[in-house]
Amino acid sequence: MKNIILSLLCLFFATVAKSQTHKLLFKTAYGNIKVVLYDYTPAHRDLILNAIKTQVYKDALFNRIISDFVVQGGEHDIDIEKRESADPAREKPRLAAEFDPRAFHKVGALGAGRDGNAEKASFLNQIYFVVGKKIIAKELDDLEVKKKIKYTPEQRATYLKIGGQPRLDHDFTVFGEIYEGLDVILKISKVKTDSQDYPVQPVHFELSEIKN
Image (cartoon, rainbow, N blue to C red):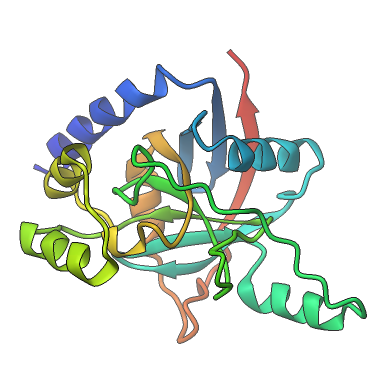
């Protein structure tokens, strides 16, 4: 049954992948993950493409892993806070949020991490994958009231079909999704972690752009 579900999800994601311009490859010891970047979140798309060229993610780690929630990688919140606190100018560079109804927190979504800034702007060098959980209609109804938002029919249908983390919508920017290797990120999401959500054994990844 699990393999059937994964196959259906891969077919679902592949449809989106065909309509976008740029794709990424995450190489891990657990297998490869292929990601499509959304053209309708261009600033975040270009940010990570430039990060690849400048080797920002060289020797990168998935360093915060929470089962049924997210697999986060790149610069850790703690390290960002330390670096920015040590900066005499106290600068906190961020990228403005890009919210689009086509980009939401379904299973396999790629998002940008951030701190508690009021603008909901993203960190420059931190990403996460949504592992998520099963969603029922009442959760979406409650979130619409709580967050004063309205889920589109497509969002609602997708969440009810494959799950995700809708409570993150309109708070964190989603700028891509997995179209191949979802089983890999699900496997990584189950690794043993310590009390701070760090993997007990380091989970490295190499990031590159797929050139067609």
